[in-house]
Length: 420
Image: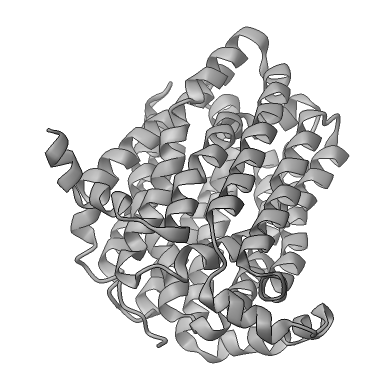
C-alpha cells in the first residue's frame, strides 16, 4: 500500500520537489491552518460587530482599490529587493500585522484599516510566485500549484474546531482568539520560508539591473508595461480570466455565509463545516482525477469547471428544497469547479508572460485585475442588502463571461510556454 501511494503521480511530484518549490509548498500549511480556521466566520464576525452588508461590500471594494497601487509597485519592489526579501517583509506587513488588528477590532474602521494593510499581500503574492516558479520545471507547474491548493485543503479539516468553539462561546470571542493564533503560525511560516529559500537566478539578475536605480524610476516604467498587456491579445485574455475569477471569489467568499445563515436558516456553528465538505471533495478530485486532466489542453477542463460553477450556483439560489440540501450541493459543485479552474488559471501567467520581465508584468496583471473587479464588492454588497440571493445571480453572469474569455484564449497544454 505504501508503495502504491508513493507511485501516485501527485505524491511522486511532492517528494521530488527541491529548492524554492519545496520550501514554498512545505511551509504553506502554516499559513493555511489559521486561515481556514477563521475564514468561515469573517463576515459573521464583522456583522456581529455592527458592520452591515453594504459596508462589508464597501470594505472589499476599498481594499481592492488600495491593492491596485500595491500591485503596480509589486514588480519594481520585487526586482529591487529580490524575491526572497520582498516575500518576507510584505508577508509580515500584510498578514502578521492585520490579523492582530482584526483580533482587537471594534467597528468598521478597524476592519477597513486591516483590509488596506492586507492589500500589501499583492506584493508578496507576486514575489512568492516568482520565488516558487522561476527555478521550477515548467512541466511540473500544475502539480506544484495543485500541492499549494492541497496544503490549504488539508488545513481546512481543522474547521470543525472553530465551529465547535463558536457553538460554545459565540463568534466574537472565538474569532479574536483565532486571529491571535493566526499571528503566531503565519509569522513562523514567513520566517521559515525565508530561512530555507534562496534568491532565484532571475531575481539576482533583476536586482543587479535595479541597483542604484530609485524605486520611483522603476515604478515609472509600469505604465508602459500596463499598456503592453493590452497590446497582446492572449495576455489581455489572461487578465480577463483573472478579473472574472476574482469577482466570483469575492462574491462567494463574502456573501455565502450571510446567505446560508440569513436566508436559508443554517445555524452559525454549521458554517465551519462547509469548508470541510469542500476540502474532502477537492482532495478526492485532485488525487483521483487531476492527473488525468493534465493530459488535456487548457480549454476543455476550464469549460467543464465553469459549467460546474454555473450549475452549483443555480442549485443554491433556486427554491427547490429547504434546509441544508442547497448549500451542500452548491459546495460539492463549487469544489469540483475550483479544483479544475484554479490551478489552470494560475499557470497562465507562466505560459503567456515573458520571464525576462515577469515581476512587472504580473504586477500589471494583478493591478488590472483589481481595478476592473474592485467595484463588484460594493455592487454585491448593495445587492445583498436588497436580497441575499442577488450576489449569486451576479455570479451567473460572471461565469458566462468567463466562458467567452476562455474561448478566445489560445488552447495550449499547461506544460507549454508560449514566451521563450
